[in-house]
Image (cartoon, rainbow, N blue to C red; front, side, top):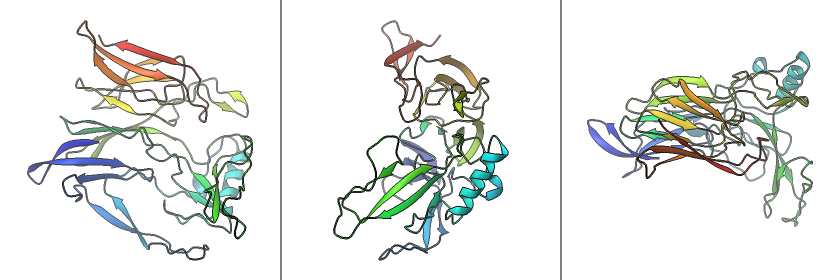
Length: 320
């Protein structure tokens, strides 16, 4: 995201870069120098991969939504049985207590936050006039494990192409393939406690988080094959972007409950919502019609991997 920010008494052309780790780099786009401070986090350098050398530090922005470290006590479940299952998974895999735990060949590693990120392709949205940012951080752990290819066979596939088999990235041409599995119980419930997704408002002028709310309900989700009957606001994934308007309202679909919502950007309060005919895993846009009225448009096509309702609708809403 590009915008101008006040910094040390002047208006500075800035760039915001959100990452899957949860960092939001706020840089002077003329020089690359940080506007928001960057510190170095000490991380483990232990690895069982021959020839690998790991950095002892990793950069972290002072503006970040990286989650607190996972703990065994934080393992969560809808029943005592799947909570125990998650505790076993926590103990059985490497976790260094930070988001830079490397994958390894001798067993699994917990990657937290996982590859879906804190932020994904939906990025963040800004109000460039009021120096405000709206974002939808999400939190799911994954388990990674490396698999070494036989010597001299860099293009040998190690995973089945059957969609029902263990998912993996072949990394053809490299010495290792990697399996990537969502860390969840046999009931399909994430091992970390909710919320799994939130929405936040940030004052970019001073880098403070003004508000944070759970984002999305469990409507339409299934546990052990059964649909959840009550739309609890647990805070769900938001795979898509947010639109900000000059009127102080942000619009977003993205969540797994097939809703599009309008928010007050200053408070995060939901002002309006509407059920979409399919999953709104997209970024809304806005335009002014020939009638002089403002419209908000979203493509509702669903998302196969997330299991939201499939469709092929493009829907416009008129702002009154």
